[in-house]
Image 1 (cartoon, rainbow, N blue to C red):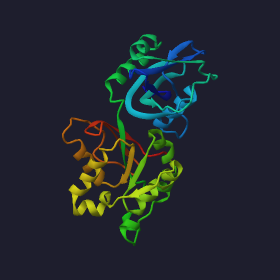
Image 2 (cartoon, rainbow, N blue to C red; image 1 turned 120 degrees about the vertical axis):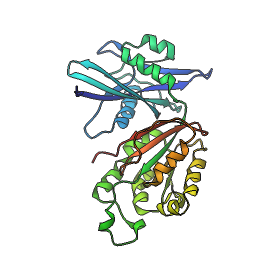
Image 3 (cartoon, rainbow, N blue to C red; image 1 turned 60 degrees about the vertical axis):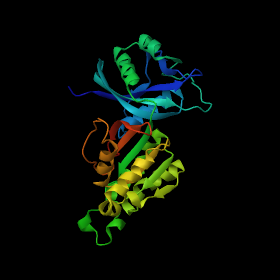
Image 4 (tube, rainbow, N blue to C red; image 1 turned 60 degrees about the horizontal axis):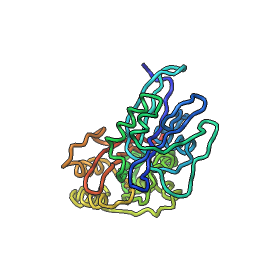
Length: 296
């Protein structure tokens, strides 16, 4: 059955003074229930952007989105409702919950208490998945450049081949998707189509783009191990990173990173504007999520 309502939300978590994990449940007076923060998808919005926005609106807490947790489905008066969930770490910084029209209370509690208190069985299932997920990990985004002008339509050097109109629109909408991770560094191939994919994103986040020839098509063709080793070294950082590169460079890099671990991920290559989000502990890959290109 096709879902009539599509929504997204998150398990918002933090570490308390004892270094124990706490999660947030919100109370909605309209339904008199305790639930995970979530809400309906808006037209043209990506699911991960919806989850981030709804958490901000319902909790007033800045968060960093983490691993994808899965989908729940249940029936509402409008029909079948499908909700996608991510983990989301609350960022310290002086923000506090403020009651609003949809949510009048927020409570931090242990995961065991949250599983008992959550009204819906579907929320309890997501909380159980959260406990099994690598929620306390770092994110490493591997983004394929947005849609570029076709090679046969360009007479100049391939590295100078620009984004086409669709690609330009995709690039303008990268911020709504990738701001959710709290990016700290952005690397790009020296190809124009890669740099232009992340330029607006980096400017909005006040991050200086680092051009890395190691992730270019030219370097990869000449020395595959150099490209792979560069990315492996990047993953040792605790910072949240994004690299923008090409096919087949990105698939081979991911293959290198996941060689010694049994990690399943979607797709053998990326379409223009898509990405893999690698969740890791600096030593090994723990989970790989795939994000679609921005809608244009």
